Length: 143
Picture (cartoon, rainbow, N blue to C red):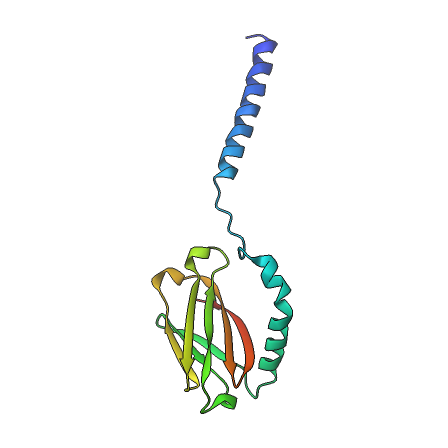
């Protein structure tokens, strides 16, 4: 085998490797954090204000996971008041595992059943309204 065939073989191996990498990388699933990130970015100051109102409460919101159930305990500041909002279970690695659950309660304790597919690292984002004041809380959890 002369040098011409060896150079041709190395060149074809390199081109074949590059083609394989392009095909492999184009078939990877790439989820964005959110599909409408620009619109959400414009409203982010509202989230900051809601988080400040939440931190000014007498106690922090408590989130715990027990037996595939998410338990959320709101501070005593809301005793006897109607709490209305949404719980968003956000999975950073897979958009299909996200869960949005609206809720209304007069009790300071809220329990949500978690589906089997939500196992792993998640974030809990809670937005709620009491007496026309909005609040926001988020916490990283592992299910």
